Image 1 (cartoon, rainbow, N blue to C red):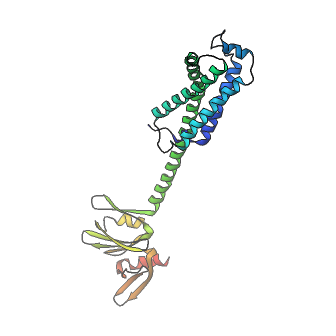
Image 2 (image 1 turned 180 degrees about the vertical axis):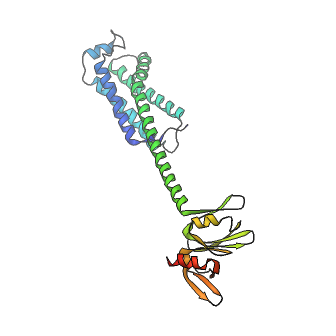
Image 3 (image 1 turned 30 degrees about the horizontal axis):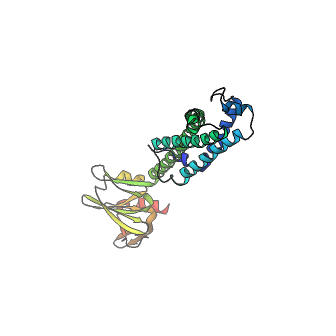
Length: 281
């Protein structure tokens, strides 16, 4: 499982790099560090209250963490570390910090490097476990809140999209009830019956499209009426918004469509009066 992007955040890692040395300093000031042994040179140095002793240790921790987190933020962000890889990275981070700290202590206290190393490693892992654990908890909680916010925003957008689609889209289904065409109601120009098929003519961003649907006008009549498509002939439904004019000729009434490429649609006497009333309104 990949770690969250929050772990690659420059801001979060800067806070972490400053918080860990500060925690170590506060801990060593509040809690008397006799864990090296009461009679050894470390305790003697602490009793002398050397003003540079503690700041140098904290500076070593800060520098190592800064370099490590800079590599994490800028070099490893594209590799998407797994949780196990990130845990290993942190362990190596603590070990490297301990090695440099132990080097300083061995020189400062005039002790053998290897004799002091086991205790430094033990103390380092025990001491920084608290800030590392807090960092993990806070980052995971922040990532959870961020993901929840993203999910809520996506759900809200989907909900609005569904509402828009349901109120403005027509879903034409075939005789088996399978939806074959979804088109905006205001883009539909007309529907023409042809045997067991219905030809749906609609505008697709300026392009005239004719789609053949295996169904009958009678089966989709209620769908057409619910979406502003009016029956004007036994074989035709027309969109009132697409009619430019109604023209009376010796052969009958025709609806002239404003879209180029669409022939005039015949209006039968059965539906003429209702269509004229609706078109006039």
